[in-house]
Each structure stands twice: as C-alpha cells, then as structure tokens.
Image (cartoon, rainbow, N blue to C red):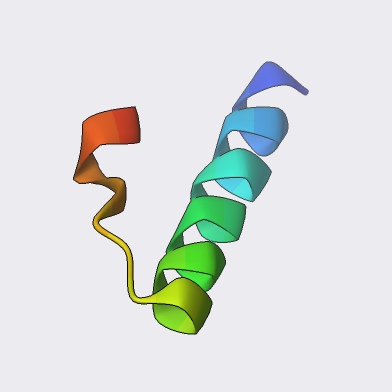
Length: 28
C-alpha cells in the first residue's frame, strides 16, 4: 500500500511539472 502512495505522489509531481513547467527534481 505504501508503494502505491509513493507512486501516486510521484505521478502527481510529474503532472504538476507538466502543468506548471516547474523543476520537481528538488522534491525527489
């Protein structure tokens, strides 16, 4: 279950990066 949360969070960050054009590598 924890892995699913991490995956969802990562996908959300990638989605935000695509929308806002921000560099999300700092969050990883």
